[in-house]
View 1 (cartoon, one colour):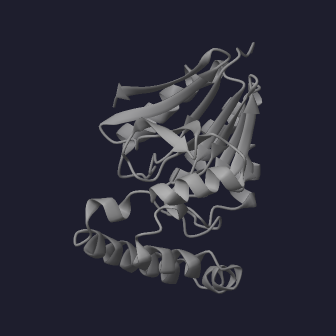
View 2 (cartoon, one colour):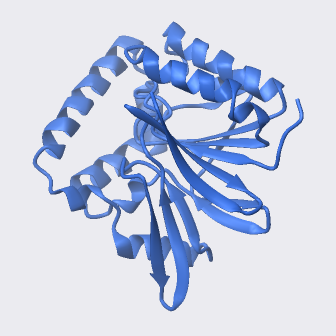
Length: 244
């Protein structure tokens, strides 16, 4: 299939068998808009939960099949870890014909650069979450966790999600949003002016003051009642949504 000068970024689909409407919206996106794109970047929380590539859930194989069909058509697919699917590994990506990328990732396209992240590491004011994140991102912890049975991992994940919901209900909204100073710091460290991320479920385009230089922070939305995509073309970018 002939590909156009177009790149898509999406995040926070939280795919799971309990939301067939979101999966169908995603599959439709792959067969229509994404089918003509050169590249597709999935910036974390692609799945609502991921306890390891050896999870026998048949739904995961359905998703993998749809991705591999898109890849076979000539669209390059890149996947980044989120806070819910940080254990997504090489096996799933190989089966999906996708590449696993680390954050922050610099996307260089159409004479412009974009810094891609999931976004949870930017929420530094949420101290309890940051402590949990540091624990579960530790390779030693991950190796020990993956050595447990599927049932044990599912039980841990369910308990962790419930604890997260309980804690989030008592947190101020701004604490769970990105820390402005951290955004500026990350952009400066990577010598970039445009940041694209998800995680916060607050889709918007923010103008930034990078100590005298102008910048932008583009926030992708989560897929729930609407789906959100960022379309990047030679003239620039547009943040678009559609009903699910």
